[in-house]
Image (cartoon, rainbow, N blue to C red):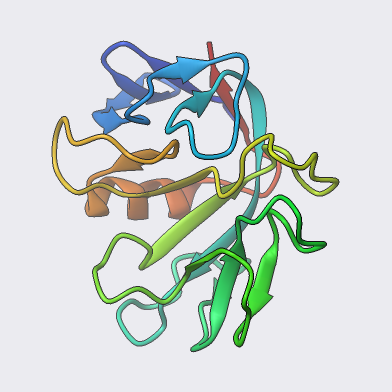
Length: 162
């Protein structure tokens, strides 16, 4: 499987490029929770979640996003940077969002599975808000491009952010 590579003109897979956006904090080699930056490095795609009430299953290895699914972003919590379930009082993101940003999510291994508290969480590939609109640290793509990736990628695909 070819690597995904972030370039100045988009995300490249083999000879193809798709426009994307990155974190509002740009790229960083010193990722911290809440900095809005996309971490540099070689990451792996380790999971895929999708909203079965909105999309057909994009790949055999995709897991459904269920009501009550959360992603813990509280560095003090034992589930920091892991999938969690409601109810949860610690800081978290809802995976089942009202908007469509997380209808399809590719999970990277940034600070996972052994999370270092405060080193950043929830570094995903997901749907963008629009061209040029930054994320909170993820990489975001047009929904049809994201779906194309989901169908092509396998667990363990490398994502290179130079």
